[in-house]
Length: 408
Ligand SMILES: Cc1cc2nc3c(=O)[nH]c(=O)nc-3n(C[C@H](O)[C@H](O)[C@H](O)COP(=O)(O)OP(=O)(O)OC[C@H]3O[C@@H](n4cnc5c(N)ncnc54)[C@H](O)[C@@H]3O)c2cc1C
Image 1 (cartoon, rainbow, N blue to C red):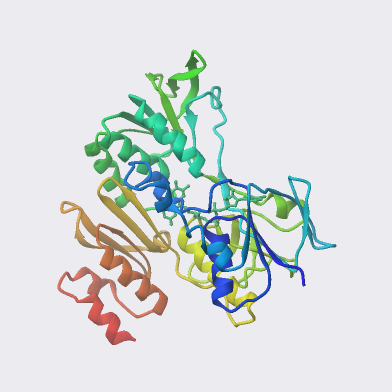
Image 2 (image 1 turned 120 degrees about the vertical axis):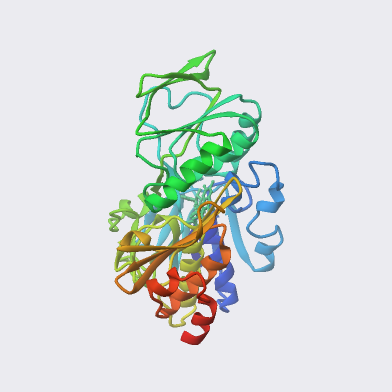
């Protein structure tokens, strides 16, 4: 019997291999990863790892012994370059090829490149991999003036850390508010004020048009508002492009990531896909979308493990996400962009609040800052579809936990 081959040894790929064994799957598993490092967690790269609050061992997804103990053939530094669906073979950059019984694409994505002059200079950095994080951390420690392009999660997490380390940090963002694609206008405004207090300088509606060097290294940036600023390093965080080339090359549909059904299957019944690279129908959203989160990658992996092990399963989880910026923990569950009414619990002044989004009487999503218990509750409310009204949420004396218990 040919092995199941998983391409991509990140959050989704490693979880899938582990869950397959937990589900009792006994056949051979090959886990291919093009990075050389033992598979690791990405979230700490812009948080604890950047601050040297954790060592490299502390970011590993699983210990060294896990793979041999679970009979998972982990092949690192191996890039899959071509799939031949007719003979069920994957060709590797090394020239070797592998036959598969089932193939899983857990290929994640790559940071979008900046389409401007100077974007490839030494000191213009991005942050997706551990190898990049090592360079970024050293460069940060040696820099005085730091420019961040893009006020998304990664850019802002980095900016808060850099400012806390006494760096002069300027963030440039083309949109008119931070994290515009992912959070409400209220939370954008809250975070913009918080970052200014951290000492970060924010520039909205402004891009960087050119980067100039001196002695081969980045030296200054030209902004669209006419300013010229010194910079010894630049972090580019302008979003992710799904790694879906292998799927496209064999004619699989990939409008914004690889299209899969609720069983994580592509149109080829022996090829599946999970994680950041996937375009899937989300039952809670009522439409197809692509998500970039640890929850999405690992829960899709767990679902697929069940399916491959022959158990009934379909992917229908409520999405959730977190981001740590300075001393603020932002957590999001569900979809607030679908709501027509937002209800506040807690207070902006005390830097601990949640926004509950409703469409009519239906809770659609919750954004929490420094209120982790609200977030946990929100996930259960959304998963369980426990009825809850905006009026109840708006009343600070209501005990949401008790309501959840009663509703079950
Ligand atoms: C700095 C940073 C901070 C983050 N913070 C958070 C956070 O706070 N909360 C959160 O929920 N999410 C966070 N994320 C997002 C989260 O890490 C991703 O959603 C998650 O890693 C997706 O898992 P994945 O398995 O789909 O992809 P990945 O973990 O990216 O793994 C894909 C792997 O496949 C490899 N690969 C691709 N193509 C090939 C090929 N052809 N052959 C072999 N290997 C290949 C890639 O190199 C990569 O190693 C963060 C991401 C980054 C970069």
